[in-house]
Image (tube, rainbow, N blue to C red; front, side, top):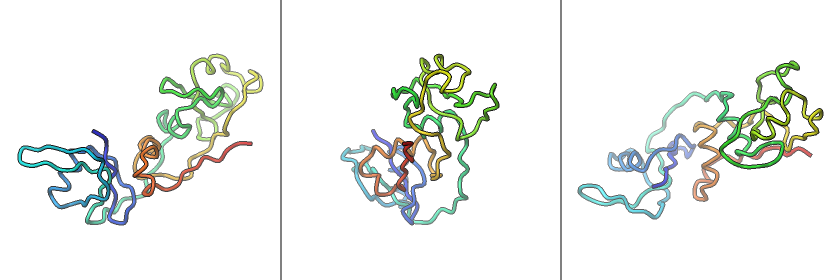
Length: 174
């Protein structure tokens, strides 16, 4: 079964939860169904149409989250695509555009997703020294979602969730 997008009562995305957690929230009257996903969930006594999007009936106050610089966040920001050759996949590493040896720092604007082949080719050189070019300039994401950045990027592939997710467009490098 698929995951369920959980919205605050003001329609702000709060979390992505399992269908079983979503059914529990529905049964307890804590959430209402906004969209169904077309599947049926069978329990011991009844069956439910599985939700795709739920909205809480009460407001949950949350502090603005801090976006941590991590391998998973960098890969999600770069859509699991090597920023040098464009190969897409899960078997990626991160690369410091300006290597630490050359004074580069571990910051959002110096770290990119990179396939292992390109990482070995570039080694500890600057991109122009390896005759490599970035497809997109790295930058700190402007939107910080309440759900994790990885979940947020995956959620954008779900058609029925798009209307509840803020628009996140990466500024393209010319």
